[in-house]
Image (cartoon, rainbow, N blue to C red):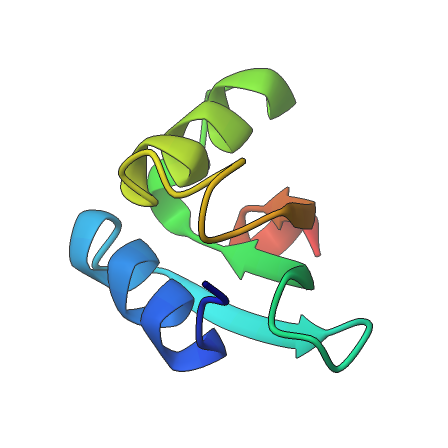
Length: 79
């Protein structure tokens, strides 16, 4: 079962309220997305920690309803 881009955005913003989120469907199949997440709450965290925060927000959807997510993260000044 595919995952809707709006649901991905909702889950991320629910867990990271200060996030600016942009989701792009890469293949038009609802399974392969690219996400850019900009959040002040990423400040002081490594890129790995930032990605872990986003994956945690998706509550286990990776590998199931969401097959692939190309992820870019940054702080507002680090864009």
